[in-house]
Image (cartoon, rainbow, N blue to C red; front, side, top):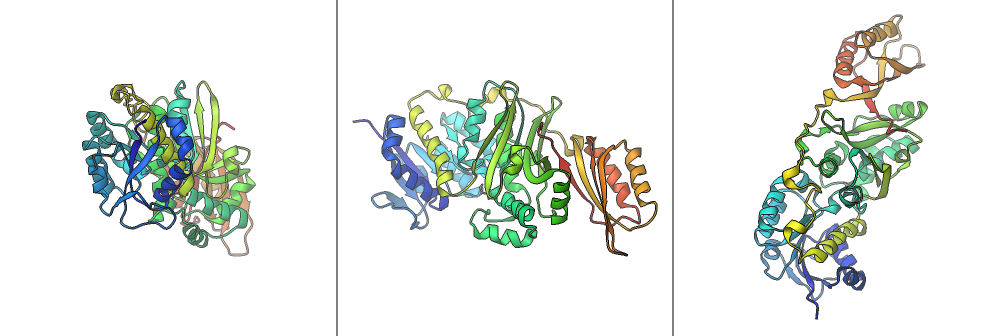
Length: 435
Ligand code: HSE
């Protein structure tokens, strides 16, 4: 009789229960794929979850019991958070367990340390579910596109933020009102500022960039801006120029360094990414051989995320008997072959900009603004002025040609200092995504 692959699951929340369900539901088919059955041999969870049936499975209330269980081949970490999860993984690795995790924050912030420990112990670490839930984006990037030099990756990788932006775009609703609804849908992070201030997307982008370019995980180097300052006025203005505002994670190899940035972005309506609405995720990858590619699907939720977790378990189950050196490297590039390309400061990034100002309706304001832009060599591609009621401030909206962010910042500082310009200047980067 073929020996089953024994899996221990730590955490029985949304993703944990989804993982149990998918493993049970597709058990026979999964065994055909692996060549051996997969057995859930031990679950560590503080409490049971009514959304799955764990009768007959050994359960411990202390998740560390799973990491210590000599029976377990693969520990599946689904508890979230970074401190306990890091300790759990290092304990399990020390005990020779292979690891599957859905924990983006853990990999983005502690992945380098975890991989080093795993490499020394000769065990695998897989984390497909950490980025864009059910979309097999890490496997696509690290395996399917492995022949390519990756030029850039751009993705809608936070469903909560995309849901909020979609509601603002399609129904003109206000940010705060929609956020409450998004939280009720159950997609939002435990701390919803992670969604709206870009932290969650930055975690995911960190991982994507490392696999795209073979650079160490550098979460602290990601430039991060959220969506909380966006207004429906800007969404409407962007629409008038032929753009949608999306919160993107962008990683680009410029040849002089790597751009790692998460921020609201104007993208042309005709780019497919612009049509991705609601909680869905989508990622565009441009490779030198394949050209532009697009991946779309559910970025969260019990079964979609379990789809990625179980795929990792299957892949690991197949390779359990292989030598460590024969297995794929954690980040798709061998640890001793990582690139030392620097991550660029945001001020060294060149993009076009959308700028919206509210100004007092006085003669000469526009001249003052354009003079400052000219002095900084910033060329305006399009501009319009929205009519206002008498004595109300007037909105001036413009799109610039490409400009170095440092120059844009200097120009905007000078513009902000003009007495006729109100404080709430909005500037949003624009990306054509090669449309
Ligand atoms: N809070 C995340 C999102 C969940 O909204 O996309 C998936 O990582």
